[in-house]
Length: 96
Image 1 (cartoon, rainbow, N blue to C red):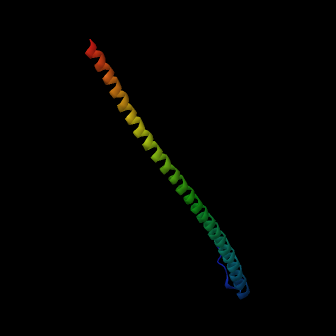
Image 2 (cartoon, helix red, strand yellow):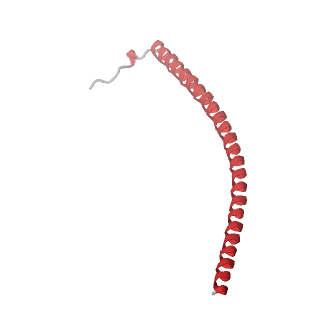
């Protein structure tokens, strides 16, 4: 295997190589800036989703309160019907 001789890497070539490396890093920096902007957009969308979830939570709170009142009504109805059945059966038993 041959080694690279010093004459093949002249100052001009090294300067050119350095410039190309700088250009490539500049492109990488631009891409990172684009990625940063996209992350900002994603952050904004997450804020919007968070607000929507707050609205959904408010709606569920209303539904929960309605369900609780309906459950109370059903319990009172069951107690009333049970009392009526017991009273009816007691009346039948007393006649016999």
